[in-house]
Image (cartoon, rainbow, N blue to C red; front, side, top):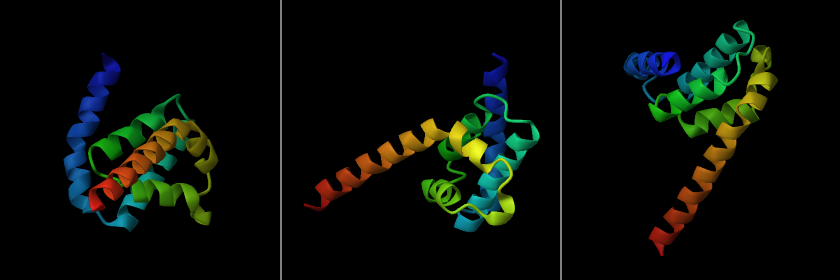
Length: 112
């Protein structure tokens, strides 16, 4: 129950974050680094990064492009905790890649 309450609180605040980020890729990438830094500061609680990535994605605060950019081209000034967060979100990226592949196949079918 406690986890659900915290998720609900986080989701309510996404409206404010969406207004600030405005679907700008660079701002979205910075939001992912903010998650990384937050989780690192808390010493990597289990599933915390995964939960936050899920919420930020589900609430359309951070796009899949921003998540992949964060993962594939890490900012050299933001390396602390990057690898640990990347490893702890492997399921998120596997799911995201699978979703992206399915979408791509679906789009090709629509074009024909």
